[in-house]
Length: 490
Ligand SMILES: NC(=O)C1=CN([C@@H]2O[C@H](COP(=O)(O)OP(=O)(O)OC[C@H]3O[C@@H](n4cnc5c(N)ncnc54)[C@H](O)[C@@H]3O)[C@@H](O)[C@H]2O)C=CC1
Ligand SMILES: O=C(O)CCC(=O)C(=O)O
Image (cartoon, rainbow, N blue to C red):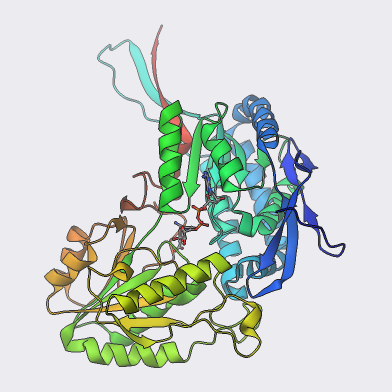
């Protein structure tokens, strides 16, 4: 779609070789506010393959001088970027809320997380990258070191428009790679503002290149580009598989972070108030649009009714609205597509025989008719055969499942294709240990919500949630570098 630009709305450019440039296609696309679809947040470039080629050339040219800097010198840039982002935190958080709908406090928290990630990886530039390994030859020195992959392509989603790009860019850069960053179209204005911080901090030209556009052109272009040695992707299951196939076909390294169908188990001995708070926070914050969001709530029968009553009482209090309004607890779905997906899953839940306890409808009253608002929704009488218990909804929908025993809860918790995050609420050490040992998930959390990862710890899933690698913390070095084993003899 060709969009005619309005004069009072800013148009954001691509950032290639240290310059802000228009796409070769001469086309832009509008980024809308999901709380009010009549509001355009900004225009971004609808780039073509030629723009991507230029970005890859720039990244290649910048790669050797960037790699040759010391880790601490690269770290200095990340510290400076963190400072600029900190200075602009309110503006960038506000833009995030306008562009994808999460509430302003959540956007601000996410931007603060981005700042902390930059500082964490700045420090990584001073840490060890290898080991000395005894050689069988007593006259030789054998050790490992690590080298960057070269140019890496980062394809990111709209649900964490600041944190996810930064948790890919910061490790990519600190370990000496240069970057092509392709954000989700829905949140490209926020992404452009993040890139402005990198520019303002004086990052050398070509080290970070930013190309906006559609997934099918720029995303696919990254997958296929012979100049890109590694691809880190977060997004849907379907596109993740395309990334993997394309990368394997041309021998590029890839890393995938995809969906989740995260359970929370509430045991008979759980602190029910704590479990309710965590279920609501883990399941409904960000309108349920987190890969770590709680979607299945598996409750032992003895406490089922009490838990349900407490949960419903709290869910009924949730204030839905524009994320910029101070009283709003839950914003809109990030796009019309996302709203339609959520509503269609709710219909499937009803059709499959689940009982709708609360919510289930689009909200169009009280001035919310211009946005993509949906009620927080709770089902009961859900079982593992139902679509709502199997597929990622990415919306504010909780499914209650009643079980008698913890063993049965674990069986149901594992009965999905995903394995990203899982929580249990219990005081019993035996329950905790069974959960830690038996739960097939990359993140297992005891008496804590399923969402909200810590930047210094490895993050990633089992089964179809990821490609098996881990992001964040020191684990990020595994993807963004290759090991060289060095053998030295006089
Ligand atoms: N794991 C997570 O955090 C996320 C999961 N999702 C899941 O995916 C569903 C659909 O959301 P979408 O925004 O449509 O996700 P998506 O997978 O289409 O988008 C993620 C990124 O991939 C890019 N992309 C799209 N098509 C591509 C292609 N053919 N080649 C390369 N890159 C491509 C997009 O432009 C975006 O930058 C959601 O409802 C949710 O279930 C979505 C976003 C994040
Ligand atoms: O729960 C979090 O903090 C991170 C979630 C996430 O990575 C995602 O939704 O893609």
